[in-house]
View 1 (cartoon, one colour):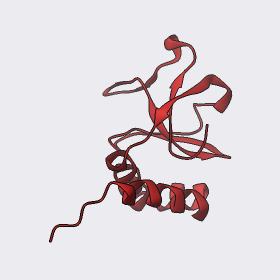
View 2 (spheres, rainbow, N blue to C red):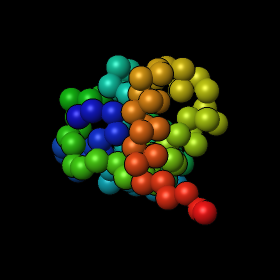
View 3 (cartoon, helix red, strand yellow):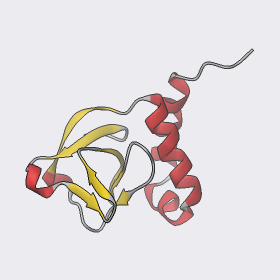
View 4 (cartoon, rainbow, N blue to C red):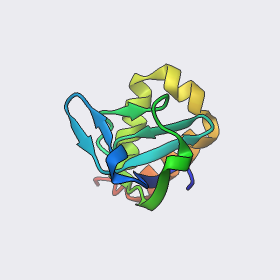
Length: 102
């Protein structure tokens, strides 16, 4: 797994959950500390997840990366914890699918 990977629990019984729902997968935002953010940008997991319990199931698309960056913009403490290198990778993914309106 790398920054920008989509990760899912190895054991489906350990689904990513919150009070409002269950998520099959999330975007890897940091490996140290291990941080996941939902593709929609509405949820973040860190203290309750461990990298060893997850596996890569794909790569985040540009819209998911933009949603994650938006979440990090609203959560400066997490943005600082994940670091500038992770933010640079996520910005690159987000920009890869950007079609400017002319």
